Length: 255
Image (tube, rainbow, N blue to C red; front, side):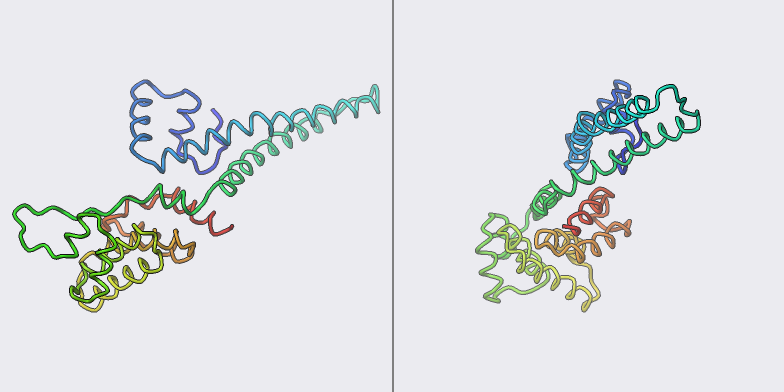
């Protein structure tokens, strides 16, 4: 099995190489269907491996072979020492590995967009349904009805204030792709919690704020917040912050 592909879970490589047992393969395929990030990593691996095998390594081997043949023609009867042979083949292997690494990151660099990363991570916020609740606010009702424009109107009118209203305003703005307004509201939620010593909608605000930063192409702020979330095992969204997500945001920051 080729283990030279970087930053890819071993089980994905084993799936690609058809080395998984039937039960393992079925389990991994279920995980791929349920995890967009994992599926994206596998798709990247497929594309990179196919491109490298078809173009990169073949050209590298052909080039080395031609070079050696030319040398033999130029110097007939001259024997190439075993040390030089080992050096040449070692160089070929090293070049192949570098090509794989470079191919993978080149694929990620040129095909990755903030929209793709955002879409893979984003899931619309859903208000919890409390049985028998009769005191639902107008903002909550509008949000539950997916009337996001009305949520923002009610928030801006100032008739309903509070952390929940501020968070729903940010979530509504994000649905409407108003990243600037979403960032302002989510930061406000975090500030209000700090002032009051509470944690109401704090975790939700931090995660959706990180996604807002990605959508707004503020990758430095997104990375800082994602690392904070990933380092906190008690955070509601810690499992969302994978090594793959952090890698993708870093790659976006290089554009």
